[in-house]
Length: 99
Image 1 (cartoon, rainbow, N blue to C red):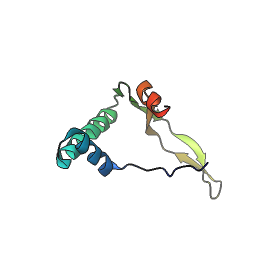
Image 2 (image 1 turned 120 degrees about the vertical axis):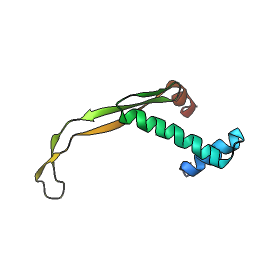
Image 3 (image 1 turned 180 degrees about the vertical axis):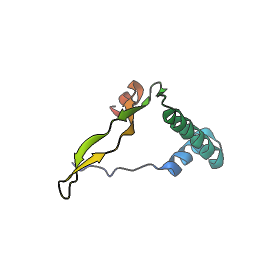
Image 4 (image 1 turned 90 degrees about the horizontal axis):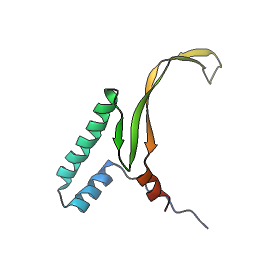
């Protein structure tokens, strides 16, 4: 049994899919997708969670400053504090992927 090659969908592919499924122009589909992505980005940047029922939840977790090691020479270094976006899969998406 051989594995089928995976296809990676990019933004252009999603715009084409939205356009085909909704009978709107690619320009309008691109604008709609950009609005959704901007909305998610702005909400996360403001420290809010984004919950899309059936799809999943995006949230921001703060990672404090910590000590690490340089992998090339083993010297200790300080890793700056940062915010990390995480995604928890919703029940509907999980069910669709596991059919």
